[in-house]
Image (cartoon, rainbow, N blue to C red; front, side, top):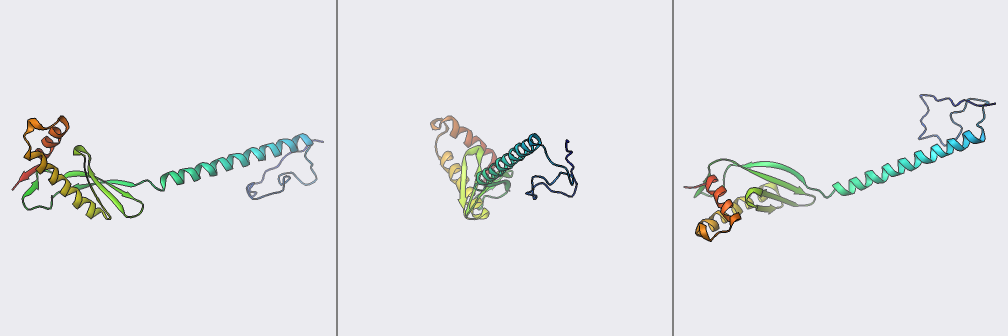
Length: 159
């Protein structure tokens, strides 16, 4: 006699440990059906373990990643300079108390324990770079510092 496996919408195979949970009353699995059932259950268990391991690894990978977003800087916090247009800064908040604000176009960075502290330090770094590059004759600068100076001269106006 061959048996039919019956499934019920109310039975959750993740919580039932009896290998015969889906067999109708009085029906018995043949040895081949029982072997297939156990093989399928073993495969399902392995797949679930793989997913658990994968999700655990993803969690470990992302827990130390920073939260990144952009913020506009509209003022340089100095009475002698003003911005001709807003500067888009990249803010990176790391787990713990580290925030980094950067202006990647000129490779300027500011660090602090809060966003406002990091942005303030970035403003000072931008002005320090501007003052340093403006003090040197342009022909003495390398290609990258010349490009930074062009960007800064376009963005900053002395008052």
